[in-house]
Image (cartoon, rainbow, N blue to C red; front, top):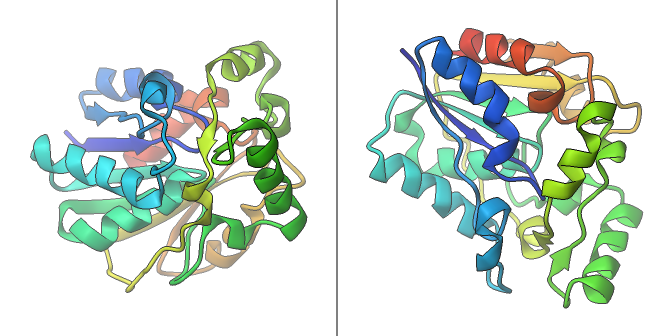
Length: 233
């Protein structure tokens, strides 16, 4: 049995992993799908103080209070920022770090550092105009190339994201875990994650996996993702 902690991305919540979690549990594994503060069913906790550190503490807290170790820790999209911060604090508890179409931050970089200046500027403007200065409106599911059957559901479930989570720079010392995996979704031509796929595809220190679907792999290809996560263990 393997223990999986699956961290969602921006605007999403633990709900997005329900199909993958079901498959992993049916295969006999232990699965946690925590929702980050201010998102999903915890949207009522949204406030101006939430930043990347808050979300790192969320996951560190889950792992400590559930007494987890030898964990496969997976982060989707923005969740890559979160799991990198978690590994900085409790690397000894992690067996594998899995970046699912996710940001892999370098020392001193924020999520916005990996986006075009025009796009990050638009998000900051949106927060000012539509989010009381600190909340970013969800990106439509269509922009993530979510399959047609699930797009309306994803749009209905997503909520605003705290701006500070994208602006805060992460300090990374380079602590190592036994295994690192990058999983790239290839179904979008315009994606900030291709830069990471190109970096890690031929890196012997990384295992590389690709999926022929949109950004929300856990929704578009849950069976394939569950199998890849088991292999990543």
